Image (tube, rainbow, N blue to C red):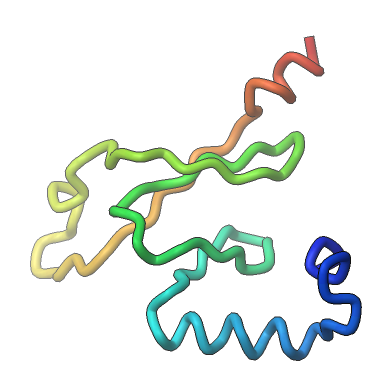
Length: 99
């Protein structure tokens, strides 16, 4: 929000949330849900992927591949519709800071 207000000082938080809601409804954005965190948003034109959440700096990085066949893990009689995987650890920068 602060970055946007540098360009448009009169920008209000309600306007930002209305724009996000509209872009979600139109399929321009997807919400990225991380346990215990506020929603983050990314462009919806990306192919299926997963995320790495750095516990040091809090940044979230894309992992541009799917790591396994979750259909094999599906309990008998269940229908699998989608899945989300988030890896947690330290990014390269934070790892170097902890050394």
